[in-house]
Amino acid sequence: MTRYIFGRLLSLIISLIVASIVIFAVIEIAPGDPASFMLGTSAQPETVAALREELGLNVSKPERYFNWVTGMMVGDFGTSYTYRAPISELIADRIMVSLPLAIYALVLSTLIAFPAGIYAASRRGSVGDMSVMGATQLGVAIPNFWFAMIMVLIFAINLRWFPPGGFPGWDKGFWGGMKALTLPAVALALPQAAILARVMRSSLLDMLGEDFIRTARAKGLTQRQALWKHAVRNALIPVLTIIGLQFSFLLAGGIVIEQVFYMPGLGRLIFQSISARDLIVVESVVMLLVFVVIVVNFAVDIAYAAVDPRLRTKR
Image (cartoon, rainbow, N blue to C red; front, side, top):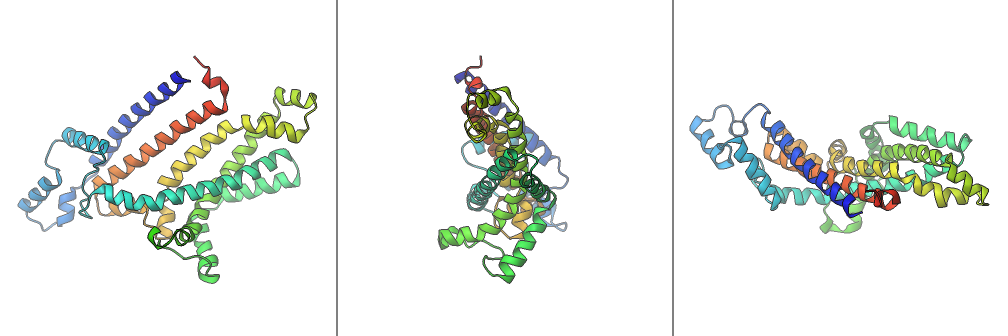
């Protein structure tokens, strides 16, 4: 188990190094100069040069990369060109919206998908199975931004059960914040729940056809007992992979939903920074999200070992 964890840690570190190089290189080759963009085309060359020096743009690219990486290691992400504020403060403010939203959506997705997938697999070929699969197909096909707008129309404008957008802040109360996050979380969760339910059903059906399930049934276990005691546990490995990927997507890929609901999260910060060519914010936030994705994948690998004893004894 120790060797398994060490190998995954080494893979994590290498992935982070490669990702930082790729992100920095991609951002740096983007056309245009941030200082010239901020000052406008009519700015004097001396003024542009002074601003470039202030922003640290006048040093070589390897030096800028080294300063960027070493700064992030101690929590210093640099200073935003546009907001004129430390990027760490911007991230801290925005992640208090994006992280609860991602967790909320993931919990909803899992609570919907697990019962639906298990129910469909246990009744393969029945009307219930076909109904669940039809619903999941619909959930995969409908764009989440369109579904989000429909929910705003019904639940915010017509019924007035939830706010149509914005975020009041956690200092205004926990339930007020959760109420503001509910519609965006549902819009993010339902398509992911549809995918997860299909994966759960498929994995569980594979397990139900294995020899050890037939042996368990031959020893006197009912189909329900064999399903819950043996099949579900062994079907979780591919499902854990999807859950890990979904959390990363929900945290990093909610840009459209945050725009629809005017949520001040990380996705909207990236969108605004790209529009303003605030490249240091873009590369720092993207690197943070990549870090989260890699750490989540590491956690999923450890969860594999907890679910599958063969990985704990693998040499």
